[in-house]
Image 1 (tube, rainbow, N blue to C red):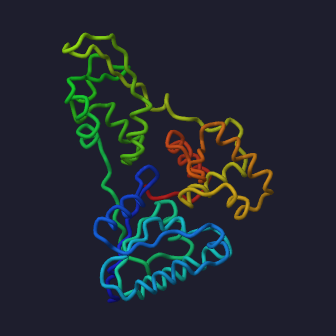
Image 2 (tube, one colour; image 1 turned 60 degrees about the vertical axis):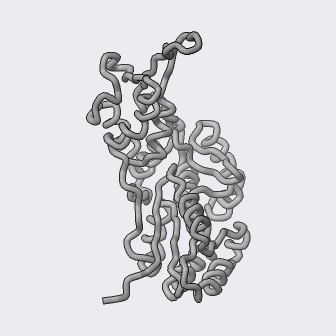
Image 3 (cartoon, rainbow, N blue to C red; image 1 turned 135 degrees about the horizontal axis):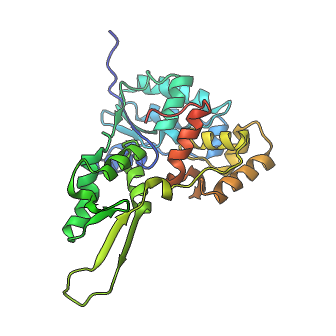
Length: 298
C-alpha cells in the first residue's frame, strides 16, 4: 500500500470562511504560511507557491496554505501550476494544512486529480436541526425571547429540536452553518414597543419562509450569465478582470453580464473579488446543477 499522506486538506462551502480558519490556526501555532501572489503572477505561470513550498519543505512543523482556491486560475498556466503544486506537496518533508473552497476542490478533483495532495479532506459536520436549535436559539433564550414561525404563531421555533422551521432551515442551508445564519438573519422579523428601564422587553420575533427572503435569478439568463456564475464559484471568488481572461467571450459581454448579476443581487464585489451572494447561493447552485454544470459535494 502507498504511504499515507501527512498533509491535510480542510474543505468548506461558501459562507464557512475555511481560509480564515486555517490562517488563524497557523498563526496561533506559529506555523509557516504561504500567501497568494497577484493574479498576474499566476496567469504568467508563477512558481511562487512551489518555490515557497520547496523552501519550507525541510521544516518539520506544519506549513499552512490557507486559500488554495486563489492559486487556481482556469487558464493555460493556472492548471499546470496546480499540478506542479500537488507534485511538490507530495514530496515535501513538512506536512501541509491546506484550506480550500469546496467548488474549487470538486473541479480540481475532476481535472487534475487531488490524490497526490492529501488523503480524505476534513469537512465541517453538517448543522442539522438540533445544532441549529442550540446555536441560533441560545441568544434568544438568554434574553427571555421567544420566536414563532409566521405560519404557526402558537408554536415557538426553539421549543423542539424537531421544529418544522428548523428542519426546513437545515434543509435549505444544506447543513452549511454560514448559509443557515444568512437565511435566518434574512428571515427574522421583529416588532415591539419601547419599555421603561428595568422592565421586561416587549418584543415579538417571527420568521418568514426562507424562500421569501432569497434573491431570485434573473428572468432572462443566457449562457454567458451561467459561465460567469460557475467560474466565480469554482474559483471561490474571482477578480472581474480575470473573467474576461478565462472565458471565451468578449470583455464587453462579460462585463455586461456581471453588471446584470450584481443588479439582480446574484453577485457582489468584495475586496476586489466577485462572489455569489449567500442570499442567492441556494438558487444559483440548484440552477447550475440542473443545467449540467459541475457542482461541489455539499
